[in-house]
Length: 268
Image 1: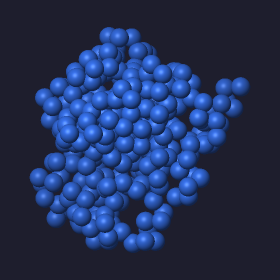
Image 2: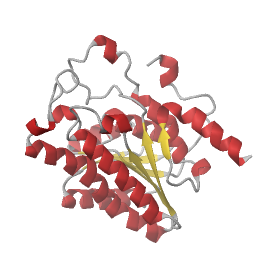
Image 3: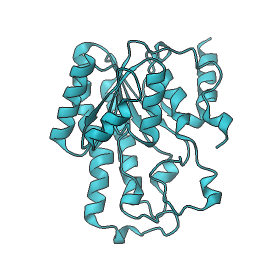
Image 4: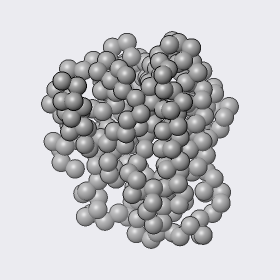
């Protein structure tokens, strides 16, 4: 990705999120780190989660007022504790970014160059990815959304991936976990319709340069990776006053400019 493509598009620097309280799961690396940083730099107060409390705290120290909490996304008690801790720390949560996830590297470190057929995937590896990438989204939303409903407002953003990734050869269990998470997000949006809480989906629009990418990826493929910073403008907009009432949308970060322009033209 070029340097220009990674930078926020013109006109987004003015968006301020002062007073916005955001919880970003899996916020110490990759897409989560990029989104948490963009939100914090726009003025939001951010809590991030990680399996490591020390890592979460060290990452949060980059931004004024931010905090880091330990959370194992696949563990019900851990998620409940983190959600309660974040709500208490922030005095409420305006935006939940459900992002924490495990990649294919946890099952097959060479998944891009040596795809593993599904029948060779260890059941424990399958369960671990599903527990974090799908069950983890459900558990965190289950804890946070009722609090938002009681408070009378809130926004949930589910991080997803391209549909082609969900169906790609050698992508069990990552593909099924993300397909399930997107279905979950759509159902959450239906369940939340006509409530004061909105739910949307955000995805990069291509493979991104994160720790989920195998180390032996070819230079040719690596040059085509998106910068995680591409997630910054859309997540800041989704937390802003401009996104009031935006519900059940599937927003592709690399197409965000065009999507937003078309939306604004329709509203004129």
